[in-house]
Image (tube, rainbow, N blue to C red; front, side, top):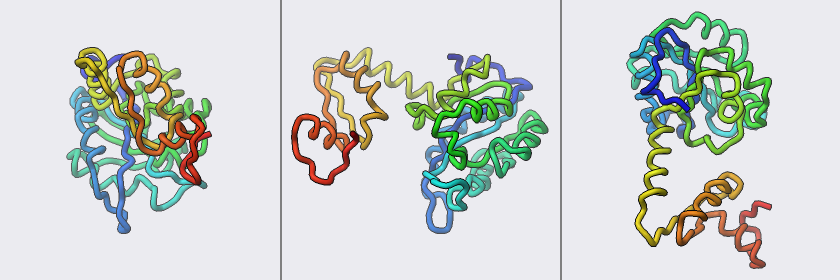
Amino acid sequence: MKTVDSFDFSNKKALVRVDFNVPLNDRLEITDDTRIKATIPTIKKILTDGGSCILMSHLGRPKDGPVEKYSLKHLVAPLSLILGVQVKFADDCIGQQATDLAADLKPGEVLLLENLRFYKEEEKGDVAFAEKLSKLGDVWVNDAFGTAHRAHASTAVIGQFFTDKICGKVMQAEIDNAQHILESAEKPFTAIMGGAKISDKILIIERLLDTVDNLIIGGGMTYTFTKALGGKIGKSLLEA
């Protein structure tokens, strides 16, 4: 996979999967913009090259279509301020407005699409949905490390529709860090993993088992392991 630093985005419309799943307060104001700031170097590299950005992300876990609380329009003003560019907003991600705004986007401009999870097809990994998204850009950049483990349309499916598939700076840094740890860690090597879902991390766990001397499981995952070993967990979280 190509990297942002090795690719020339001149006159290219980059469809960038970012992770803008940030916390909002009751006034729908961002309380922690760390994830947004982390993606700025990727966006600026594209713009500096003379390209344009079409940003797509999820926010929260909307269950039945559009929900005001989870609209990405709440991120437009703070993102524009942080980036130093007036960000355009499409109130859909695959509708006519999104298509028109993406088509009219000029070098140096940024467009933010509405919440991907307003469509159930996103989390289902729907191929047709991914193809519709792909038509908005010339190249695809994945900079959403936080969702890289999910088989969603905008992360695991969309790449097949692009010749140029590019790794963003956030993603590349995480990959480099992981490789460094796995390849150069001193022995004995102990890894500690937490979280609720084993299914989200099973591939990582399997990879670690070939490398580490000890693997410590914490968080909600422990209940599933305890149950599998014949232990009692009551009504605690269980992933069957």
